[in-house]
Length: 229
Image 1: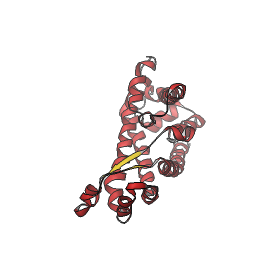
Image 2: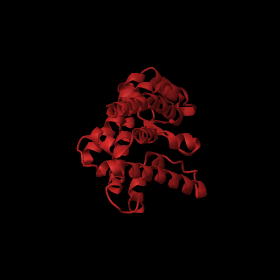
Image 3: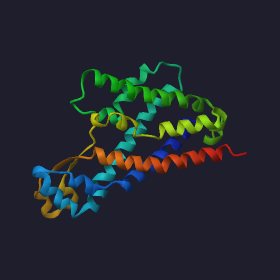
Image 4: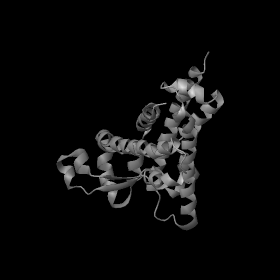
């Protein structure tokens, strides 16, 4: 089927996932976790969390969304050819949000193991997409039903829309971080305040898990409808 049809449907679910993550994201919890010299800045931002959500949190989540879409490109390249996945591995890894968020303290064998697991996840995605990319129909759901049985399609949805798996498996290996410029967010006298670096890994996991619990059942329901007689 057309490559763009696959991209478009994946993008639809990913957009829903990001929207649900944003809706569930508790920026106050992240700011309350700030300490030390950043405490005063965090306090100012806590009193004005709405601009922070609009100008910092949503753009950050959208940047992750674009990175995931960019990573899909080499995965689809692999799915559409007979070439070995190794030919695409560097490109896939360079666009991986988890690899790019790997803590500097993760080294040696553990770093190598995480690298292989991240690549294996994307290789599996490409393998699962290959029959769909090769399908004759240009209609996405017709191509799905021609390429997989109902059980396989449901398993693919579960596995590849569960974006938090790497973080749940190696929670302390990754860091999701933000740099907040109070002047850009609040304007006025806030321009005199220093920038604030915050980590939001725990809140990212919590809000993304919430999003998965909304989006995956929706996608599974779409699968069920596609196979209805």
